[in-house]
Image 1 (cartoon, helix red, strand yellow):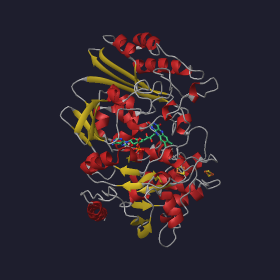
Image 2: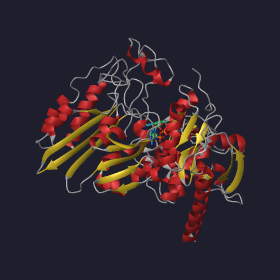
Image 3: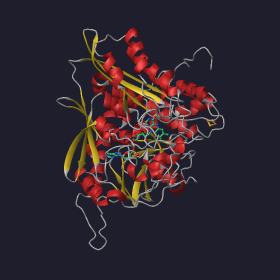
Image 4: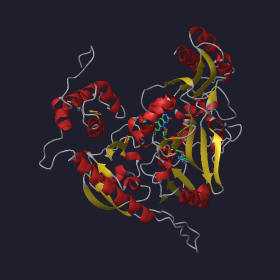
Length: 330
Length: 204
Ligand SMILES: Cc1cc2nc3c(=O)[nH]c(=O)nc-3n(C[C@H](O)[C@H](O)[C@H](O)COP(=O)(O)OP(=O)(O)OC[C@H]3O[C@@H](n4cnc5c(N)ncnc54)[C@H](O)[C@@H]3O)c2cc1C
Ligand code: FES
Ligand code: FES
């Protein structure tokens, strides 16, 4: 495959209202590609690994951008940038976990344009797939990463089903841990779905990473936040470099605390499954225990239970265990 | 002075956005013969504001800003290296924020202020304080990454005139330097902001 400097010819639409965008998206359906910041899109189109006849740019739609306090928490518009999220006082106060996650994405320049919706709807980074090889995910009949010679250091521990690619997003695990919901618009109206149910693995649909169908647009993301509840957040990302690199494993943790005990726990990792992976055994184990090194040790033992490592990614098991340990030690 | 500027910007912004709204329209035009949709489709001939000047230019729908700047407007100070958002050589300012010009559609910034390295020096040729400081600190080695480093540093000093060295390191973290002159660039930022180097034990 050769890399090209420029994208091939496409149309570009710049609607200024959500209604117009929905009309365009449903009319053009699979012939169009939604673009917010474009940071996941342009690589595909420049490499010609994927192509489109038209781009529908969402960043000129004012109602899609901004961070607001809502009755139950915080509402974030789909095209709000990661920089805006990381710098938001409201987010720092009420849901610091999301601000931390946004701050760890890519580089300052990418965060200045990359949107929250684009971040969760981004495609996987498996390089065989991104090179345009005809793998299962691309409609072929082989997973190049899961062969004896496959380079699969970055691939999954859980949820493999022919494809072993992982969810690359830093904000997705934070949104799942926070119990966020996502509002999606299409020609039939608005639909709300839990962040956890937004993502799909290859067992459900091997060609997509989420439930979005052509013609559907993420409008906003809602995160419940109650300042009365005492919550502890923890985010950590392990990557080869501090900038640009995707997480080998990241962890987003939300712990509701009462009288020194954990009453509700959410542990979510990216980089280990094709969708954000909830550590349910760890969650159950932590409930009604105090956060601290004793709980941390017990929880760490359960962190990667059931993992099925590939040739080159056994180290992710230790990473998961250590991240859980650190989250609970605080 | 500042208030005036902001008001002017605000008014300019309002004018720009109402023009955008009118030109994109909100009606749906469907070509009866082809069934093609023309809602908010871009015009190729647009006016860009680059370094304070209006430039009329013919831009393909899928064209990246780095190409428009270099190939159509002759502004070759903005470098293209990876062309994939992974190095920072193409960094420019869009409404005072650092963007990768290789990964920005020209059409998506047509209503915004674009600033490139060519726009840093004063009309009489006096260098920008950061350019001067980079020279005095011998920041560039080969110099290829320098325009990008400058633009990230300008963005930083505009929002935070006296950054700590750590803040500067963060702000320049989206700019690779193959020569490894990172500490020298940070020395330049500290000098331009009128501060001591604040280095650690290494003495760099
Ligand atoms: C060098 C590099 C490093 C990166 N590093 C990281 C990293 O460390 N962590 C990380 O999480 N990400 C990383 N990214 C990935 C990603 O580009 C950014 O995270 C960014 O947030 C994507 O947002 P965007 O708005 O630019 O996406 P776009 O490219 O505009 O969109 C991405 C996808 O989402 C869809 N989409 C966008 N908006 C909507 C919407 N409103 N409704 C429905 N679908 C929509 C698009 O159709 C497209 O398929 C990196 C990217 C690059 C190029
Ligand atoms: S050329 Fe744009 S980031 Fe490398
Ligand atoms: S000075 Fe040579 S790449 Fe930075």
